Length: 306
Length: 247
Image 1 (cartoon, rainbow over the protein chains, first blue to last red):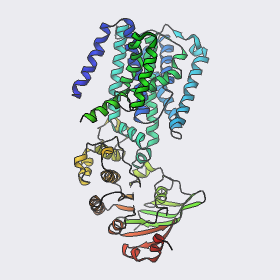
Image 2: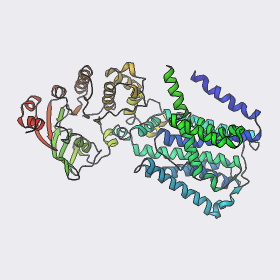
Image 3: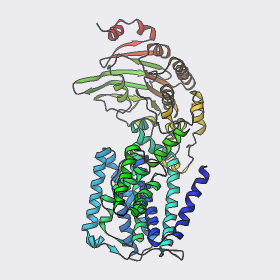
Image 4: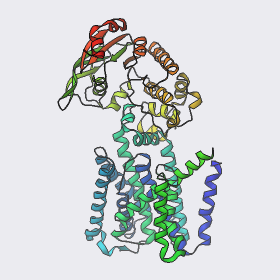
């Protein structure tokens, strides 16, 4: 059954843009980008159990790296490389506080970092153009394939999402993934079994942050205009919502969570003025009755039906 | 012959309470040393100080003559020291097999080979053997959290042996385990001790279990060693009876 599940999921993703208007294609592309950022946060929070409210900052670092480089004529792959390296390094450093503090204390440490990045993006006008933002961010051309059209850029985002998903799937099924889970479930016991919990904590932060950076590199050419408020705390909370609503610690959680966060509010627009209220009620009911998220709910139903 | 484990003048205080008060002893290769004492006598604190989970206030711990005081627990494990905890410590979301793979994986290859190499880190056959040895074969694919308490306890002990340690410190391995399973656990520990010349230090309240398993016993009361000897000698020692029953 599992063998057929992936192609079944892929078919609608590939076919969808041919039936959608440009705004619909934009939303699907945004879903793909946010899914990548949420996969990163799911790795840090869901698998390794380290709370972070800084994921938006890494999306911002990635987006500004892409915007600054590509508007100067650099290719997008250079931005991917540089943003990944910067976010890996900063994510590794951000992991150090996690060696000393946990839970809500760690949330506040990462929140402070997020605020710091936001202030740099807003105030360092010589580099980021401050509140005026950066416009005219070009979409890439890959081996002669221009991704200027929305549908082409959507497939580009989908391709990057596929690569990130495959790499993450490998990671979480490897001994590293097992060590992350052990870190989340019982760090003291993991340590007594030879798992270097300090090193794995730093790795979880670094990789999760790098995926945030990669999402940012895609976000900049998707919207083609970026300014600091897009990467403020609101986005971090939204990404956290995606991970938790989808199912923290489940591989497919971020895919579902990003769909709920990006697409559901749009689908609820038929209710006009009520759509945000309906969305908020849906999230509250889900969290009240199934804190393990949609995939946690699915697992509960599957266990009951056995 | 040099002792495997040397503890010299180990002390640990919490505020005004001296939980461990100048404890010294040796453990030799292949020995099964029992550590008994009334509740609150400092047994688990002593374990935690030996194994780097707590920083001792004073004293020294040596493994094979090498000072290891304040060495991190993960490094101690890589030196061939395993342990179990007083309370159950399995990973409930991982399967029985994955718990065992995790318990051995950090001893295999480099960090990069653990990312890019085989999913079971080359430990699949060893994990299956350990599952069979501890009679957990029917549960290999089950999540550890779904096992009964006794089965989890067996898994907990099995994990401590997965990396082939030379010295294992077991904190109340018999606690909460039913008599049938307990006999099995004792047999497994004896077999490992005989086959690998592995050395054990066992904290235990179950006197029948500790007396039938251990070759030598230390008795701790109020953080100090009050008696030491063979199971028979300890059973007859007036100081031990007094420590357990009070004045």
